Amino acid sequence: MFAADGCDDPFPSLRVLVMGDAAVGKTSLVETICSGGGRGLENHDSGPGAGAQSEWTCGCAISITRETVEVNLRPIEVELELWEVGGTQTYAAARPVFFDSIDAAILVYDVSNMKSYQNLVMWLFELCTSACLPSL
Image (cartoon, rainbow, N blue to C red):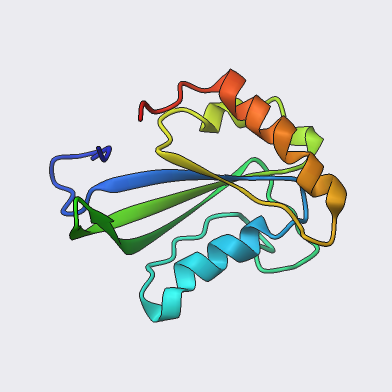
């Protein structure tokens, strides 16, 4: 069920793609998940100015945290890899590179921006036509 990248890894790994239009709050969502009340181990690699609100993610930013999930009624600690892809059209051609080997996807929109909600259909279409989706 989990893609363990190496035999030495003590925790199974889940790769989650975070996608949506530019400036909808993807980075804020990922930072909130990773801060998790002090539980997360954040490794946010989005380059210079990552914390600035005016900066957009270029290409892909990867954040890693540990979370406990329930599988078959048992709690299991997993390493959660959050792969946030840039939402601008400039990076559209490069995005499919990051779609391989994902375990889940989070589609993000801004509740005050109806267009970002309507564009979720295009994001889902891009994902479904560009990736080998995990079997359920």
